Each structure stands twice: as structure tokens, then as C-alpha cells.
Amino acid sequence: MIMAATKKSLMNVDAATPATTRPATMPAENESLPTLIGRLGEDIMDLVNSQLALLKVEIREEANTYARGVAMIAFGAAVAVVGFALLNVAIAFAVSTLFAQANFSQPASYALGFLVTGGFYLLVGAIVVLVVKNQLTKQNLVPKRSVQELRKDKEWLKNEL
Image 1: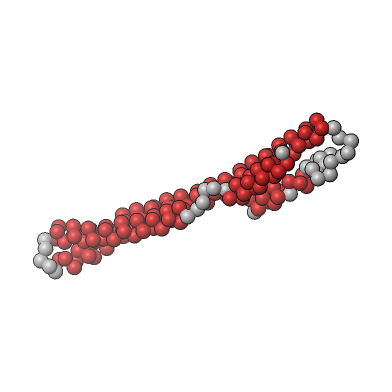
Image 2: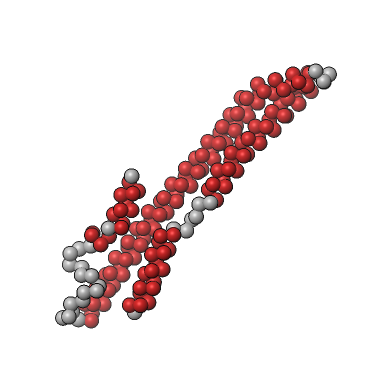
């Protein structure tokens, strides 16, 4: 909600400009060249300030996305560790009973049960981490709207100067 309000206020930059600022398309006939150049400088500064504000909002959005992704990776890793530590013991003892019938010694049966179960949980944890990592790599770090606006402004300045 807060981010949407910020974007909305950025889109209404014209509404926030002072009433003394006149649109560039309506120059007064009696204004001198230094006054027009000064006003052009003010307009350029307003444009740069609004572009920087938009860039800050976009960077904040991207940072929030990555923070959520990192939190999910940490959660997945914690689940994998807890699963490895707790369920591995119980399942390893259950699996070791399968090896007990193969006439292995009891320690060897336990060792094989723990190896099989531990490998399974490591695989599950790795899959969770890789899936979330791949989702994060699909995020684009370049703020598209700011780059597009800067290109438009560059073309506008070329045409004006």
C-alpha cells in the first residue's frame, strides 16, 4: 500500500509543482533569454529530481523482492537442516531394520540406514534452495521504467537544444 501511494505521488509530479512554474509550451512573449534559460534549468532539475525519486522507488521494490527471496532460501535451508537432524534419525533406524535381515552387523545396518536417509534429506534441501535461487535469477536488476524515462528525456533534450 505504501509503495503504491509513493508511485502515485511520483506520477503526479506536475500537480506538486508550484503555480508560478509555467509549462514550457507557453512562453511569455516579454520574457528575456536569461529568464527562459533559468526556467529551463529549473525544469531540468525538476525532471532529474523526479527521475531520481522514481529510481529510488524501483530500487526499493527490487530490494524487497530479493529480501523476501533470501528469507525463503534461509527458511528452506532451516527446514532442510531440521529435517535432516530429526527425521533422519527416526527414518534411519527404520531403514536399518531392512539391512538387519541381510545378516549385517547391527552397527553396519545402522550406518547404512543413516547414509540412505541422510542422502535423501540433503537432496530435498538442495532442490528447495535451487528452486528459490532460480526464481531470484529471473528478477531483472535494471529499473526498466527509469531507463525508459531517461531515454525519453535524452531525446527531448536533444530536440530542445
